[in-house]
Each structure stands twice: as C-alpha cells, then as structure tokens.
Amino acid sequence: RRRALIIVAAGSGTRLGMGTPKAAVTLTGRTVLEHALDAVTATLQLDVLVLVLPGDAQVQHQLAAAGARAAQRCGVDIRTVSGGETRTESVSAGVRAVQQYAQQQSWTGAVHVLIHDAARALTPPEVFHRVLTALDSGAQSVVPVVPLADTIKRVGPSAHVRQTVPREDLKAAQTPQGFALELLERAYSRSAQLTPEESAALTDEAVIVENLGEQVAVVGGHPHALKITTSTDLVIARALLAENGT
Ligand code: CTP
Ligand code: MG
Image (cartoon, rainbow, N blue to C red; front, side):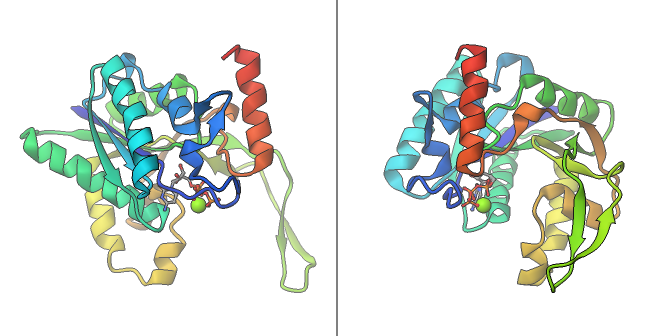
C-alpha cells in the first residue's frame, strides 16, 4: 500500500481574526502550518505530502517553503495546490492532487489517504499512527474521536432547552481522518450530486462515507489535537507549547 497525507491549510481564519490566513499565524515564532508539519516524520512512511494552501501568492510562497523543508527532512515527495472557498473544495483539490500523483507514479494497489487540518497544529504523532494502523488492519475509513466534556442541550427556536442529549455515545471528531482512496473517490462522485445546502452540511469527509452506508471506524484522538479556531484556542496552544519547551 501507498500512503498520502493531505494537509488542508487554505482557510482564511476569520474567527481567529488576525487578518492573515490561519496557517500563517505565528505561535511562539513559528507558523501554525510549521507546527502542524512537525507531526510529519519519516516514521509515518508517507509516499507523498499534499499541501492545500491559500491563494495569496506571498502567503503561499512562504508556506510552501515550510512544506518543502518538512518534506526534505523526512524524505517524502511534496505537491502544493491552491484551496477553494470551502473546506470541502480544498479537500477535493487535495484528493485530485493525490490522484494525479498516483497516476504519474503508475501506482497500482491500495492507496491510504490521511486528511488533516493544519489548524490542529499540535496533534501528536500517536494519533497519526493510530489512524494508519487501523487502515493497515483493513478499515476503509477511520476517524479519531474524543469524549465531549460539556453537557449537550438541544435548543429550540424560542431559546429554550428542548432536550438534554445523552452524552455517553457522543464523540467529537478530529483529524487526521484516514480513507482508502478508492472509497474517497466513490464518496466524492456521489456527493457531486448534492445540492449546495446538502454539501454545506458536509463538515468532514467521514460524513460522505457514512452517507454511502459504509462503516467508519473510530480510534482515540487526543486533547492536544484541538482545532485552533478562536483566540482562546491560541492561548491554549501557546500554553501547551510552553509546557513542552518548544
Ligand atoms: N480550510 C481549507 N480551505 C477552506 C476552509 C478551511 O483548507 N476554504 C482548512 C483550514 O485551513 C483549516 C481546516 O480546514 O486547517 C479547518 O477549518 P477552520 O478551522 O474552519 O479554518 P478557517 O476556515 O481558516 O477558519 P474560519 O472558519 O474561522 O475562517
Ligand atoms: Mg472555516
């Protein structure tokens, strides 16, 4: 089997509100993308790394250089593409790049694809390994999850609690999510028939696989794999880095 990792880093970081794409925001002197790339090591045994980057030429140039350094460090090929308006479009651009690469290299046989948010910049390598191991053991689709900390309420239109949702079987999904390329292709060709509203409801790739009726396996995620979304998350991420002495 072959292994590809797609890191989606093309978002604008609106909720962070730093006026620069989130992947280019610095955290203790290094960009969010550089931190995310720290998890890319030779032990992952990747064949290709695909970076999906913001369209802005200067930002793209800077982030691509960081990607090239990481790729060289662990001896993996790299491809860089521009993302789209939505995360789903950015992921599809990444998947197309993997397909192209597979064709150029005349790959035959299974291809395992990991899709990872650059914004989960502090995801420990062990999470990547758990997802890869599940794929190697035959899972076609794998999602890392963590338990929910809060009590979850369903709220009605009149701002009243309708129901408290039992929490035991609710989990929060993280990335990297792993897929057999063949399944991802099938899921995407099906989702091409969706209306814009339906496709806006696709917040991760596993959903489109679930919609095919295929099983999605879960493995343990990690609290450090939080998605840096707001300024509060940035504070947490800085504290975690300070604790690790990085
Ligand atoms: N992403 C992407 N292309 C998009 C939107 C998001 O590649 N059009 C990526 C982001 O770069 C991020 C991941 O998807 O690594 C998760 O998205 P999110 O946390 O929502 O990041 P942003 O879209 O950048 O943030 P915001 O929604 O606050 O603008
Ligand atoms: Mg977003």
